[in-house]
Image (cartoon, protein in one colour):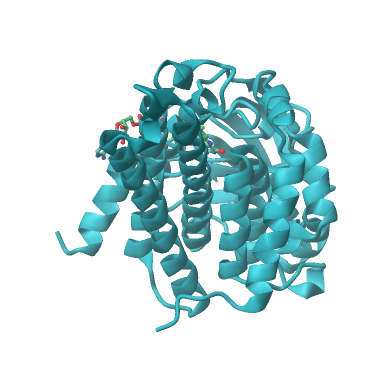
Length: 381
Ligand SMILES: Cc1cc2nc3c(=O)[nH]c(=O)nc-3n(C[C@H](O)[C@H](O)[C@H](O)COP(=O)(O)OP(=O)(O)OC[C@H]3O[C@@H](n4cnc5c(N)ncnc54)[C@H](O)[C@@H]3O)c2cc1C
């Protein structure tokens, strides 16, 4: 058994950490978060480093690396700032990686080089007003017109749709299928297609990469933009789940560690009763529990990265990683506020933003309740 990274992986981690520390300054984070502004400059610089290409084969201009390097990158991005990870995630993981897994060869050639260079940004639209946890109940309809489809309906909570060039849109293509998982097809839709309207949503946290409502009114999409087999979109969607859950888990593990480090620094500086509050056992125990949660989240994530690289089935483990990391993140942030007392809720300090940003993790990418149900099934319950 060996829990170590290779020297190349350690070097890679170091370079991502240095980059994030330089680029994700407090002023930059606040200027994006407080103004609901996508981190366009940061995104372009990450692309210039070649990091959009991490999981893609070299034939498309990618770096040809695997789940472990992707996990390292997202952990460090999450440590630097959630916005770095979350801007990356919708394009590289939800967009590009799905295209790699079940797009046509032509689609891979058309979109992957642009995604890797940073020229193409993507969003992923599955949720709808009536379709949340019951994701296979998708209603937005794509009518087959031979050489093209016509899309009508509405998507909800589409992260980064407002900056996207393409929106991977999950559609119903059979109106009343016998099984709801059948008759679903995914299309690559140009975000500026006539008939698309994008309305930003105002939310509690993660405001720099916020969600949107997307309306589709008679949107014409060429058949060549259909991903995988007609009606079999659900099969493709499932292929991407491992890397998707691993990615969010690692971002959350990284952010949890950033919160722990921030809280420890504060506790060592803040004095009450004539000594730093870090000397009080009650505060120490909180910080220890926070550190343990960050570590466990990280270890569960790297287990998935390792299993994916080894080609091992890990359906249970990937849900466990996502579930644990998202709950740990909120718990760590909540206790981080407590460690800082009143200063924890002031906008002058980072903890307030950590707290708001951390709330959403247990809802997006499959809510905690759904992850527990998946794990229970895998346990034979
Ligand atoms: C910040 C953020 C970003 C997002 N980004 C995207 C995106 O880019 N693309 C996209 O398509 N979607 C996105 N979503 C949507 C997200 O996937 C859904 O919010 C999530 O699947 C839950 O759906 P819902 O919000 O409709 O809640 P509901 O499904 O209405 O659930 C409400 C509550 O009921 C519980 N519940 C529902 N069914 C069950 C059940 N069977 N058993 C037990 N409990 C149950 C849920 O766990 C939850 O606690 C995003 C959401 C957020 C908050």
